[in-house]
Image 1 (cartoon, rainbow, N blue to C red):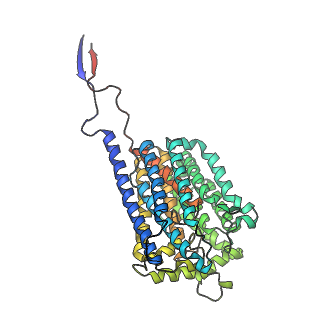
Image 2: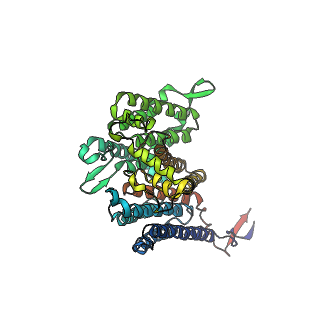
Image 3: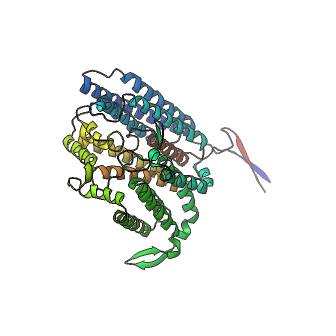
Length: 475
């Protein structure tokens, strides 16, 4: 019997994981500083265009925003050190640009009695603080994304209840003025849109359900024109979601949330099963249901009429005015825009929420809009990269679903204001004025950061330390 003494295995000292983690956070901080510089430049541009000098409140608003965002960065550095370094700066840049546009609209909103007070900018900064606070809370409470799978059905019930709540309340507190959409809850001067949080709860619920049922839903039925259709017995879930989306469309006149709700489930179903037939089936079902609703219900038919004939005199009492004015505004912006503060976006009703994209189009032009869409595209790309990197099936499906939900929401609102699809009235993430959308968007970014941190986190270090030895006995 003999024994051999050998050095213990150890990590490579030339590339310690801690240095890599610090490198990611250093990159994040540099990108945040770059974003702050762009936001400060935009603020200054607005001030010189409107008043010929720097805004007197620029230091106050920008300083508060910088402090809030840096606190978010510190939280990521401590709670998710391996997270993607671009998600937070990209979200902060969009949020900051939204604050700048809110300030710009508030300065001239009262010229045409637009419903935007001079305190709107400060309120938006407060909403930002609440959103980043929820962002930090998610990082503190959700240390491992897969623990959310335990609440699959609970969150599903909560999400459906939040979606249905505005339809069950009186129109006096749930209907958005002059739109016919019942998507909010108004308590005095305070309003909340429960659908924004319902989408997050349902994304988690769909991920948990599809992880458990994906093997069954992936089974093929009949083959038609080279496409393997799902089995008839497996159509139950998509039929339920389709019916729920149509109920949203009919009783809340909310085309946007209906499309995002249906699209989210179909996209996650496709990610879980890799069956193209689910995508085609879901698309055909939603289009057929929307068309039938437009024939059966007058308020849905009005939305489609505005979409198809916005310049026609057949639209009663100028219902297409908002859409037409937004189109005129973007057209007047041209390629490079009129400069922040140089246009007249405040003429468009509800430009600070539903039509904020047209305000940016008028003052930043097509080039500015493409840059904004590129920022959204980068957030979606980083979310999908996290989905591809993480090993846990639930986290993979959740990251893919959240990324697609953000992309679909941007597509639906941009498609609506540009007449690609019927106008929906949902908000533009991070850019629109208001609290519910902004807080929900920050929670979405927190979930993606947590998943990316889980995906990039290195394996645990060996128990042995440097310099210790192992004793191997041979007989």
